[in-house]
Length: 580
Image 1 (cartoon, helix red, strand yellow):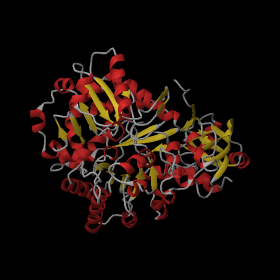
Image 2 (tube, one colour):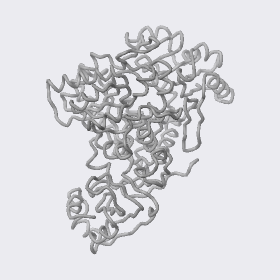
Image 3 (cartoon, one colour):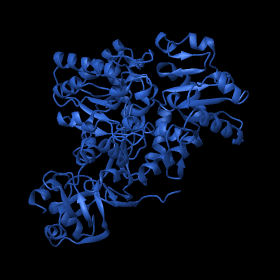
Image 4 (tube, helix red, strand yellow):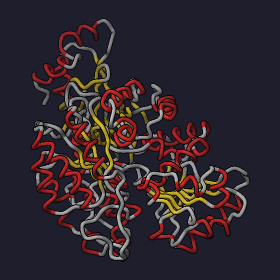
């Protein structure tokens, strides 16, 4: 039932109460009441409801239709029964997604290790090396362009060897760039190397760490070695038309998935590229809000020995009202990409290759300490258990030297970890934002290659995180996983691999915990829980409209629940029709 304190909460947020009633009587800010088959609120005091009242983009009442309308008294309202046969949940949040990378990877030729279900159709997986090369050969033959040919989705553990020599055989004259599935690696043929001015002298001039992660003869560049190459490639790859069209497609994708808020932690530090994103994602008709967190790795490379905090704060001016940068938050990077098997592992790899650091440990420690002492919430990209050791060591040292409460240091991705590290995360007051798709996509293949079944089956040990009482959010890291929160929930609840087996069922989480991880705990991880994440009076009226209840349906069906659309700050937005 709606209670008196609900009105007080709404009044404190600037809506509801006497001012709201007076405004309604003047014909301003009229109240709308939505009804639904079920409203899952994520509010512990009132887990379910059947009606929600909205005024001026915020929630002013939740309960049964009778209790909500009774509390409105003489205040006029509009009753909207559009969702009478649907389920409302708090607006879904993708805690970590990359619009720049997502718009580009999904706008070039996709040949990937898995199916990509997109608003305009499905791109089927390339099942092995022969199929990959045949499809790349066919794509090159069918493409009538004469510029650089880009393709994304190649994965060496699924598609075999790739090198400059092999690409030269397929395309001796036209420049070809193969963007690895991880987005942390690129392969260039000889024509592409020449086109972008990447020669032996260019590689030799790189810093030592980057030079170690570059193989000029193979045309292969990864982690620290790919960033200088990417700077050369970006002006062509991220052309104005491709960026605009890709971002429009990306926005449509997120809306179709029921997303009402998302965040990019650690995007490319470029005001020009930010302006391009603002121009699309910042438009008032886009039905979600997109937050940004500065890339502290890049900022430290430029300013660690100068005014690091002052320069980081300047990025706050790059956002807009709909695409704001979050003040006091920053993203750092520890070890390499899980899709490349470049993460740092305590026990190494079965085939003898070594993981890499995205940031050298001493620089990481200095950067972490600088942001910590400035009071920042630090989000850290981590994939291997040795990478997590580095992060937790830095956090523990900073806590001992300069204790802080409610710091919400966020372990991002949370690929490989150990039980002792989960306990340590809890003790140090950190939180976790995990990508549960790692288990689904990689456990089977990594069990066979590089890592072995025991460690691979324990990827993303979410069950232990929840049992330890650690706040947990889920994210797609799009394009590292499909940016569909219901699919991420399915991955976390079922832990089903691509072969259909269940890996470590003890590490599953409940449907309720999974929904919380893409709503209230996702908001908490971004310090937005006062505005987003649950259906409570005073919060923004963001709802995702579903065909079924993810808390009561068969857990194996969660990913297949239809998304009717969303309500964003009180305005109804049906999902785009498939193929739009």
